Amino acid sequence: MNTLYDVQQLLKRFGIYVYVGKRLWDIEVMALELDHLHESKVITKEEFIQAKLVLKHEHRIEENKTKNNNI
Image (tube, rainbow, N blue to C red; front, side, top):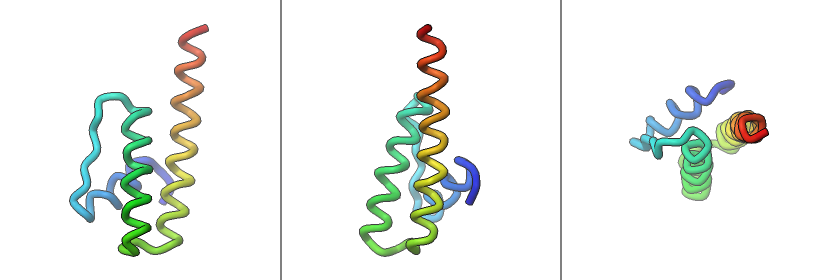
């Protein structure tokens, strides 16, 4: 799992589709959904960790874009 698309496909396996309208918010909601799947033990620890790392990376990118646009 290397991209945000991969995380979306993981969530899609469980019927979870996330679209809030702002990419940063979408990433945050995906992270919450991943937490729920992990707590329910329906995804492996490895899947959870990989997906969270991807989301963290994407979140950082979006935050930097927002900061750069406000300067």
